[in-house]
Amino acid sequence: MDIRVSVFDDNNALRDGLFYLISATPGFTVSGVYPDCNNVLEHLRNDPTDVILMDIDMPGLNGIEATALIKSHHPEINVLILTSYDDSVKIFDALQSGATGYLLKKTTPAKIMEAITEVSQGGAPMNASIARRVLEFFSEKKNIVENGYDLSSREKDVLGCLVKGDSYKMIAANCFISMGTVCTHISNIYKKLHVNSKSEAVAKAIREHLVNDTM
Image (cartoon, rainbow, N blue to C red; front, side, top):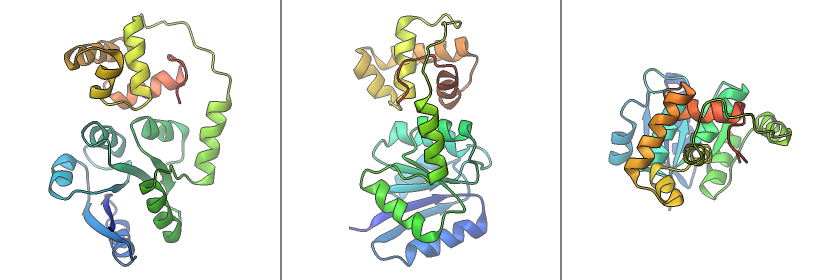
């Protein structure tokens, strides 16, 4: 069967170019192309897909927030970030929100198609420069800082699950707690870390080494 691909990008020219590239490549089909992620779950319900090419900077819901939302409802869908941003914060925010790969928009069309195939087969494609940043980050000495946010041991467990990309359902199963308790812990985590979203909480946990083994 063809690999079904959806594109979310507010750049009209790039979006059209990706549509024609994917449509013209044997073994691939376009499920849909969209200028934003504001109705992403509805789009995916109407037009099921296997792989998503996701921009980061879009009006309304950005690509990182959308990735977390998608993975919480459709963990089977692979999200491949395709963006101009190559800074470490964006990279780790995207990956920890559930993105399976991270490419820069300067990537050649052939490499983009290779990456779509790779991600659909269980790989995690990245540009060499992006992969180097990830390796450098995780090769640094990981000293856990003093817990200055008064997180309970259970809240740290839940935060660790968020960092690993677990959905709320997976957190409940892994921590042997109810979905309601998961939501309560996450709400408390947001308040204590002074953040407003999963991506912000995960980014802060990584930058400040608030949990063990962030891989």
